[in-house]
Length: 498
Image (tube, rainbow, N blue to C red):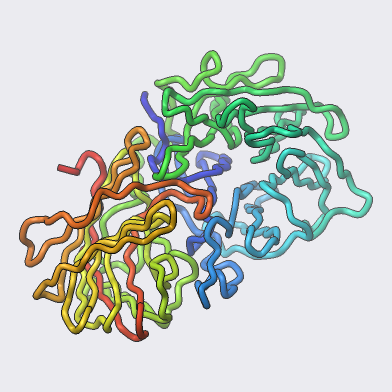
C-alpha cells in the first residue's frame, strides 16, 4: 500500500527499534519542550505519541528565552534509542550546552534517569556488544568509534578509539547521522551525506566483521521519490517479528520540515539493499502486529478541557507562572513576562506541527486583558514567521498581520480597528511541491473570514532547523502583565480544507 511520507509531519533524524511486538521511534525536537518525543507503532506506518523523555533539559537562560537569548537551531539533536538488558537508553547531544546526555528507564514511558557522558559526540549512536563492551559511533565528515566505560559516564581508559570511515572535503555534506547496529555477527554503520556535485541527501552503509577491522561499503540509496530533488537518507533499519527488514529515513520537504520515509531492505552476501533497484518504491507491504489497533492522532483540534494534550509543545521552556489552563472554561491564557520586539522571543508560545501537503488552523482569542502594545494571536512559527493577531493601540483593538521576511525585515500591516475584543483567527499553509505559502484571515462575531496582509513565503532555514508550526502567542512590546485567552483551537488537514 502507499505509505509515504510517514506521519506527514516534521520528525527528523529518526531512530527506530522493536521491542517484542512494538516499534518505538525517537526524533529530534531541538528547542521545543517537553522534548525528546518517542512515538509507538505496530506496523511502522501509523504512529502515535508514547512519551516525552524530559519536561525541560537544563533550564538555562537561553532555554527559557530570558534576556533576549534562545536556543533556536540548537537543543536536542539526533538521539540514539536502544533497549538493552531490560532497560531503554536514549543518548543525544544538545548543541547549546555542548553536552552529551544519557537517559535510561526500565519502562518506555518513564520515569527517565538523567546522566551525562563525558565528551561531545555529534549524531552519536550507541552499541551494546554481546561481550558486554559499550561503544558510541559519531562524527561529521570523519566517523569515529569510542569505547565507553561500564556505567556509560565517560570513555573507557585504554578502550577502543579509532576512525572508521571519512568523507574528506565533501563540499556539500560529509558523512554524519551515524546509526550502528550489529546483525548476525556483522557491524553495520548507516550514514547520510550529500552528492559532491550538488545538494542531494544520500544514504550510505559500511560494514565489518570486527570493530578493529576495515569497514567497507558505500552508497545504498540515492533517490528523491520524484520530489523536488530532495534525497531520502539518515536513519537506521529495524526487523519485524517475521524476519522482514525496513529502513526509516527522512526527506527534506521544504518549510513543513523533514518527514520520515519507510522503505524495505533486503540482504545479499551480508550486505543490505535499500528499496527496489535503488529507489523508494511507491507501494510497500507492511503488516501490523496488532491488527485493528486505533491510533491517537499526532496533531489535532483541542478545546483545552482535558489538560495539555501531548500533541502540544512549548516553544522553549515554559514558565508556569505566566500561563494558565482552565479545563472548566476550556481556555489557555498567556500573560506577558518580558517586553520583547520579536514574536520568536515570546514565552509560553504553544505549538503543533503543521502537516504536509497542506493544513489550516483556527482559534478564538479574547484580548480584553491586553495592555497597550501587546500582540496576541495565531502564527506560522519559524524565523520567517507569519502571524495574524490582535493588538491594543491607543486604547483601541486592531487586527494586524506580522510578516517576517527571509532577509529579516518585519512588515506589519496597518491595524484594522475592530469594535470587539474577541476575535477568530485562521491561518492556512500550502506545502505541496515546496510551494511553502501561508495566508492569514480573521472574522468578527462568527461572520465571514476576511483576508489580511499578503501571501507569506515560508522557508526551512538552519537558524531554526525545524519544520513550521502553528503557534498560539502573546507578547508585550511596551509593558508586561497583559494577557490573552485562547479557546476552541481547530486543526484541519488537507482533506478538511474547503
